[in-house]
Length: 361
Image 1 (cartoon, one colour):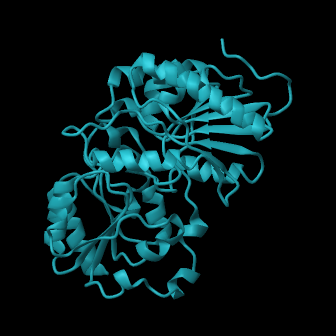
Image 2 (tube, one colour):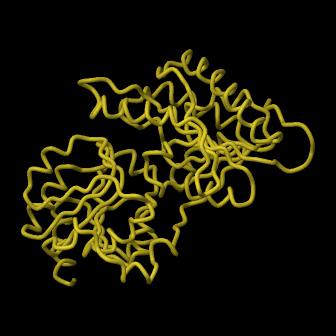
Image 3 (cartoon, one colour):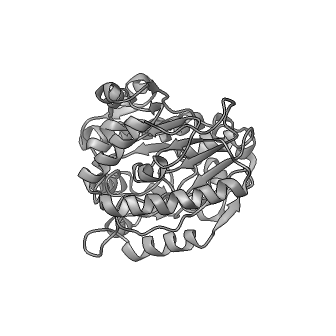
């Protein structure tokens, strides 16, 4: 039985256990978009991700880079973002067995209790996206608990599937409501939760479709790139991005440009040997429309795996808001939008769609 916070009135603050880190992950994530809006009305304490797996040399990509960025985030402490969010990078032990996660749960719950008191939050509600936060969440007293089921996290590489599934089930039982972005995942799990709701994804249309950015001065890094510019922005991680397809795209559009923007969490060396590939690294969320607005064609070069079957990439709607032609791997949640994009089931179909679209722009 879940412990309720005292009193009958509405909550006076929200604790968000996010699956991303505010200081280095893309800000387009649904947690970021929802919480920045809620922070206009009520105090929101954003807890940066404690992760789901420990990167190991030989098994994981960019291991020491990932260690360093998490350590740097942790030393940020508690800070308030201009959006109004209070951001906190918790101290935790980076181990992910069930017993270690129980220990981290006690440690994290103590930090959140202290921070809530400091911020004057006495009757909080919880928004939970990260499964490994479950032991901390189950120790709290909450007005309401919402589990944001934006991915099937137990399908992620490097994570212990048994452990993550156990944490997901804890949240199914403990949460008042589970919100889904994927219809198939909701249908599969709806009998395991108290209340299942399809939320889908919205898009910050005013951010991605402003009229004024067309008049901004282009950054020097993209001012004279050969056309067509075929582009992708987002987190570059090996369970999402089909690197072999990206290499084929670069060779196919030569001497045009393959422009890539985003956080590197995979080894891009083989792609960057292609002479017409330009990698800019991460770009601040506020500047994305200016850069992505220069794409002649936008790409969704996903791997065909369990991740894409169970998710609903918000990037699709951001590209649509930008008014870009889109060539994409076909995935289940694409179906309502297939008339607006160029879907492909094979690399050959992807390149054929790219040939057709490139000839139209």
